[in-house]
Length: 180
Image 1 (cartoon, helix red, strand yellow):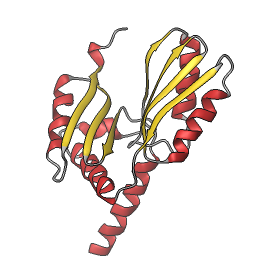
Image 2 (cartoon, helix red, strand yellow; image 1 turned 180 degrees about the vertical axis):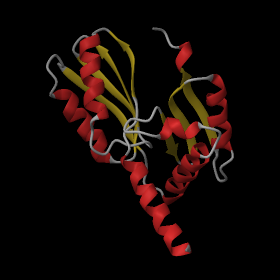
Image 3 (cartoon, one colour; image 1 turned 180 degrees about the horizontal axis):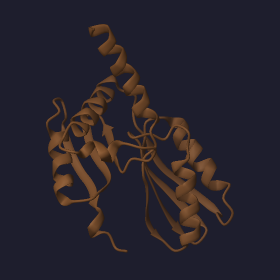
Image 4 (cartoon, helix red, strand yellow; image 1 turned 90 degrees about the vertical axis):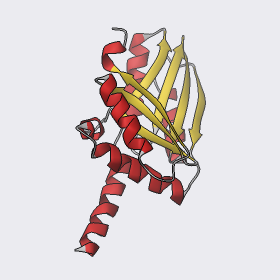
């Protein structure tokens, strides 16, 4: 039974790395281009729940930023956006997170803690979950969108319950507080 549980957890951890997450734009002057950039970023093959990508558009110039677990995701994001019609320049400010078994352990523990907390699992499900977890040298940042301030606070408390974390930053946004 223990062997089965370990195998299941290993498969679940690999599956979590493959899940795409939300991509957010800052200010954009071209809504059609913004939609195309977002589509290209969420379709990246190795963009996962532990990655965070964002972009801003100024005319035909696109600036990419965020954090990713794999270096290939950083270069794939730049390549995909450069090919879009209307894009004249791409500035890639995406940070590749350092390889760390310590951080990988924290990623899995925070994911499990949030998924087990009072209905928050729904933010981690599907092909494009609305909540994602960035771990950089033991510091956790929660990114994405939730439906209520209560869920935002619950996710923060769930992440804080994980041992070995140096800090938790809650950058989750509440859906009802977003401009329409």
